Length: 588
Image (cartoon, rainbow, N blue to C red):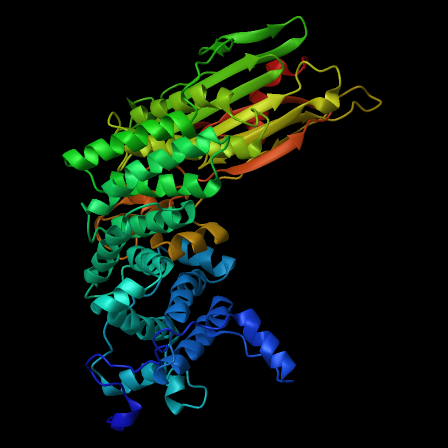
């Protein structure tokens, strides 16, 4: 079982010698170097290692590139960052597999998650040699390297370099901010170990806080915020001063950006990252409480648009309707369901309105202990903020932005506890209702989770005069077991598995596939959706508050649109829902 010493890595951390630039020397730009080679008649240099790592198609290819660079002491900071950015997606692809096998594994109660990533080389010499030479195409040990070990081997090479950089003060201070953010994001999401290297995240946060002085650009603020989110998600430094230091800077940036006319997508994402970091660091001390309050006020005023009062809007209550004289008819209602014969708390919130020729529908379905408060808060923010959208209610991007903004405000709210409570949400507008041209009518919808919208379409009457009806789905539910969402969740540190119900004999798995924390024994968050608002612990393992949008121009036969929560669509098919609306069929 022994192998030559030269064929296996020593148990202690390897020390590498790297070529450092001479004092006062400046690096040659890639463009200048390429021009020089062309003047000398030389061929262009090969593609940089970082670019090759970014485009690696599988774990074997990534390991081959990282292993060769690691064994020759040629692994650079830029290449290591590229590997950390690419590795989660490749681990997720390997874990999820193909659609047919994914469905079968989940049906049988299987766990779908990324493989464990060790932070130390194994003590067994044969295993260590296989992992050490796993990327060498000519090595006999390569055949012994199991598929699951490839990602672990590639990570160990990178982890060594990360440790060397952060352990040395001069190297840590010289590391690019984006490199620190990439490291924090990877370690925070995938939590390698045991042992878990909490010092990596603490060092990244300490270094970021040291640099957070003077004027900071929006680009740098985005990297600081991404780093803060990674550290907060890991729970390695739950009350770090970095979160409170970033909040007032983002509040000022939001104010300045709003004064210029628009808030960039990058700045909005930065504000949400720090909002999540602060939510995960509760309970707050006095300093964090003040900082969070400043950011909350800025998010509500400048991002959500809550400065403006809602005026001239006809609001519709449960069971009421607008219509008559050829005008559109609208109605809405909500009824609490039952569980084991007991009436549940009604955690729905909704709002519909007709202003001019534009109808607005907001539907929020809460869940969790504080689900009713969450849905009420989200609905209120959307109701007040949608009329203030810069692009108007007919913008799909605007509706999605409003949902994202409402989630950021919710995470910072003092009135609502959103750690393990959240909501699914749908916002929709129907415009052109006052136009004599039927082609001017458009539906725009944005949603997260399993709130659903559908059209009732009436075909042109045939010769016998009998119209045929059909449904047109406007949304697709965001479920953890859909292929793309499953890969995204696993790459973000989530685990997908059906709910487990212990009893007599083997445990029984039942119900839909749910999202859990990777490798955690805690039964949380257990969400049956892959996107939603609130649920801070869910967002720490992949839950996404970014809405999917859809736009459609209505036809002459589109007579009705229906929006409802899973309380309807889990028990009724689209066709049955349309049949329930038969009372509207003779009308437009």
